[in-house]
Amino acid sequence: MGTERWRRRITKNTPTPQTAQPPFVSLHVPAHNEPPDMVIATLNSLLRLDYPRFEIVAIDDNTDDEALWRPVEQWCAAHGVKFVHLEDWPGYKSGALNYALGELTDPAAELVGVVDSDYQIDPGFLSRCAPLFADPGVGFIQAPQDYRDWAHEPYYRRLYYSYRYFFAVSQPSRNEHDGAIFAGTMGLIRREALEKLGGWDEWCITEDAELSLRLLRAGWSGLHVDQSWGRGVMPLTFEALKSQRYRWCFGGIQILRMHWRSLLPGARTDTDRLSLAQRWAYLSGGLQWYGDLLGLAFFLFLLAGSINIVTGGDQLFRKLTAFLVATVPVLVALGLVRAIALLRRGTGASWRDAIGAFFMWQSTSLVVARASVQGLFARRAAFLRTPKTSERAAWWEAFRANWAETLLAVLGLLAIAGALTRPQTYSGPLLAGLLLFPTLGFAAAPANSLAAQRAALPPDLRARRRTEWSRESRALVGTAAAGGTAAVLVAMAAMLALLVAPSPHLVNPPQLIHPQPGGTRPPAPAPSGSPAPSVAPSGTPSSTPQPTPTGSRTTAPSPTPTGPRPTAPSAGR
Image 1: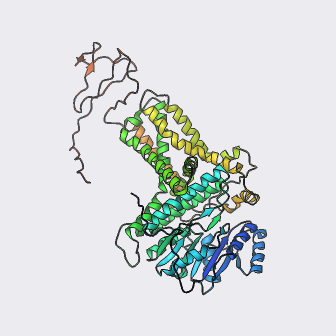
Image 2: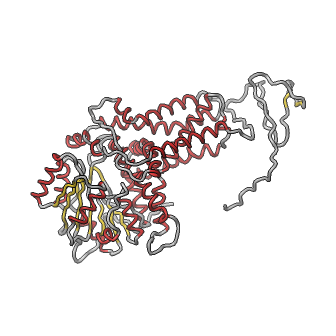
Image 3: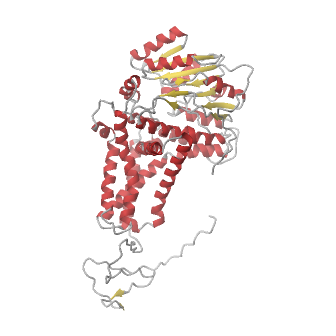
């Protein structure tokens, strides 16, 4: 299931291709409501690049406060950097990048690079990455997105390692089969390929990943580079992280909706040159977003099971086999072990930070589940509105900003307590154990929010954290609420069906505590088609029905099937 031989991996020791003349690069830096000092620091780092042929294009994307973009405009004029402020311009980041491509890019540019406005770029970025385009089949390259000012606080360490997993584990694996994702910042694209595909698609809010799929489908190749060449700023509040995860998931579902035909197994054609491995990489990468929705549905199912146990019915688990109930926790445990082991191996994270990174993913599961449903129904989406939080906020603000996760965590705790009221059966302790993991995941949301508010930061990042909500203030556009409500109603209907639907057989759940000596055991279910014998007080079978004491349970005869018996599937199917 793994490999020690990497055919396409580009490490520090991989030789740099030699070219007669380095390609001309146009670096595009989009910004929206960013502090001017941070944008200028990014532009300054680009001026220090150790590369002979490049230009810098700064694009202010609809910043509504003139005091934020005017200092950047003045700095660019003084340093020979192209600048434009777009007002009421459609398409969000994609629209701004399309404007820069069509109106501001030097005609001599062969490569287009994208750098986020909060990144500090190492001088060797272009010298190392641009020569990789000496291969005429390469359409894009992607270096890891990396971050700064994270090591001093536990919250930011956990967040950092949760990001690093993708670039240290997932991307190298995808790259082996030419299925890497173009992740936007710290990436370069061949201009010819970008223009032939019509530029950036403005319908998708994850325009970078969507572009890489179209490039691969058109027959171009992509490359992932192991070494980091720039460091930006992570979301400084947990609410901003949730908004980011929402965009990533919603955009991933948009890609599935628009390109699912290209991802199905099939032969290569002139219009779809994806290999089977590339199709699988993008198809599985899109479908994995629904893991959180399935986890939420299973959590609701467990809550119904707890209600059933507390009310004395215990029917929910009687209708499920032990194998079915045990499958989910086994898969979760395997996923946990796999993720933590790969994270520690790929990034060097400690056990505590690796487990913390895993629960960072789990704490955003509700917003991801929401986006995965809404992405099926809404035609378009903008950025998710997030509450305004800062280090001066009261502690209860963390719970208010994450009220839905807090409510689910409380329900999970109550369900665990309810399940433990039946400790003598398998169903009670098993249900409590199954509820523990998702309950901790939901409870991690307000805990992470509070930790982010209280985490110490340098003065410039502390000021950015206070205004971070303004960069995430675009509300959702679309008609997705009905779809999300419908999904919840379907899940509730399924749980009610499990609770109230008649069962053809009575199943006695196994007991953890055996009867005391001298007690009686409940009769075993009779074979199908034969009446259940009653037990006389003396313990001998009797064909005459005996009166049943109040509160005891009788075993009804099992009906004899009258239709044809289903045939067991043959081996190999």
